[in-house]
Image (cartoon, rainbow, N blue to C red; front, side):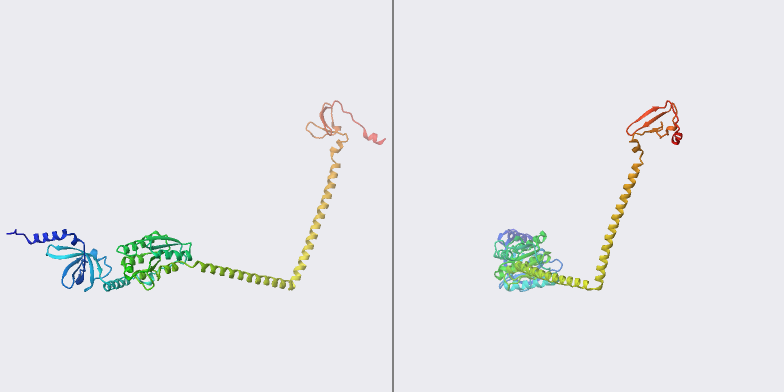
Amino acid sequence: MPDVISVSALNRYVKTILDADDVLFDLALRGEIANFVCNARSGHCYFSLRDEASSVKAVMFRQDAQRLAFRPEEGMRVVVRCRVTLYERDGAFQVYVSDMFPDGIGSAQLALEQLKQKLYAEGLFAEEHKKPIPVRPSCIGIVTSKTGAALQDIRNVLSRRWPMVKLLLCPVQVQGFAAAAQVAAAIDTLDADGRADVILVARGGGSREDLWVFNAECIARAAFRCKTPLISAIGHEIDTTLLDYAADLRAPTPSAAAELAVPDGQAIRRELYSYLENIHEIMQTRLGLCYNRSAAAQRALFALPCAEKCRTAQTRISLDATRLSAGMQNALARAAGRLRQDAALAHSLSPYRTLARGYALVRGADGDVIAPDTLRPGQTVWVEGMHQKASCLVQASEGTNRENTENL
């Protein structure tokens, strides 16, 4: 007889077997959602996956459910990534879902419409949030595949229209499982870098499935929070993704995005030449008008009665200035003549001129001139000639009767 075990031991044993199976640890499972319930308090989702013959219980925890880009609904066909185990307490065989994808274009389109309505309600597509595209950018950030034709198309257009612009490439995958996260991260990187004046997110044409990655919620949210103006250029003109709604401007193709991002240099050059010709023409016209007005004003000035008065007054002032100058010259000449006469008179009366004829001055010890009649014996005097003086001692003094002599 086999050993008797408890229900808990049985459930634990079955759970251990299931958890040890590598195939059941990471399984892709296709089915239709049934009995879907999302717990409002915990955020966990509980449902069943069924096909034509069977069903299995499934659980998706809140942290995984929050990453979904669509809202699961009753009857939707999906593919889930999950692990198979046993809920030990109830002995319930169930799958724990880590990710979920719509199965088939119908379900995928339904999920896209749900996400579109959700983002629209949050205002991610509102026109008031659209930023203007700069007219003449100096640097353009590009998010695309570095090996794709879209990059070459953009380079060709930019080199032709605005060759002085700088390009800042952030290469990404544009399809595949990891593409959405890479594109969103590239947008954030270029926006944080700050060098780009505008960002282009581009991908060449492809099937609807190839372009589906640009419907990812993370890309739309990255475009919305990007502070740098962003242009989307995904596929061809008929292709539309959620990125086109969230971007500041949608271009039908990558080449068209390049044309929208920069001005036409040739057109600007032609416009500048036209402005230059207009400026020259206007300047010539203005110069002609000014010359005509100046000539007319000159003729009018000389034709006025006051012009003759002005000319008469000008002539009178000129004559007065000439007479005043001549009078000043005559006065200066007369003053110079009087000065010469006074100088000659002063020279003739100079005592030095008398000394030059052989006469001498007699000075006392104090230097004052004294008369010879006042000399006394024993007195020391200085006898000063024209070029020399001598100290003399008076030994005798005699008087002369000039009056009697003059009377003879």
